[in-house]
Image (cartoon, rainbow, N blue to C red; front, side, top):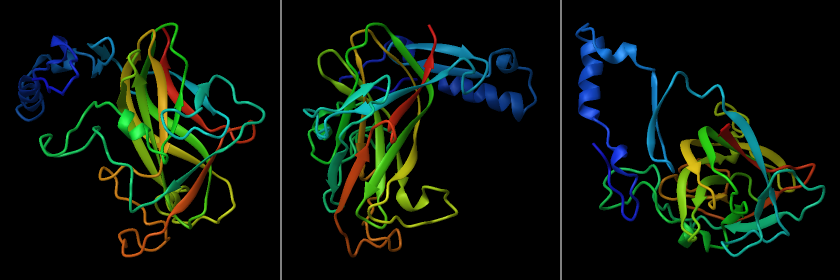
Length: 282
């Protein structure tokens, strides 16, 4: 079985015998049959970029090295044409980035892990450049890579932020940038400000205060090939994949009243906003 996407081909090796694998699993655990299931490694993953399946003994991979890429720029990372970059070390001083989040005009979901009918709402890998042209999207990109870079495992984004709203959201999206400019989404995530400490401890934000947030941006397995670039998008909405935050601090589903929020992302030595990647040594 393989899933086809418009303008994206992961090759013939992307096909997987899903039905056979399901039957084998049920035979092993429900019918107590001795199948080949137990003789194989417990993890099988598809590595994009090289477009190959690979067996592993554990998840996350023990050999993965969490590698930070720090945000940098001159305070104008807004849009694809902005000055946001990803670097190996945080700068001592760096101008923060700002954007306005208007929940009445949220950033539209473009592909990714959405459901349920791709004819109505396309899913999977899609070019993100239309999204990246919005002023309410901050874009940070590495220079073209000089060698292949494999990223396999959980992806996290650490942000140092300030908001004018008592409650709001921050989103992060990992993107593979091709030499021709195509920006292909890999994985994404969101954090609601009131749940920055825990889901069981809602706490509204105070305007003027800087908060450290950690966004779980999902998992992936992708080789950023030589000549490609690593990119992260930061915003406050990804709708309708995630519900929009009305920025009022009221009940989460209460969208009768909405307000705009001024968002600030800091990136300097004291506030090292960063993308954390599980890099597999070559």
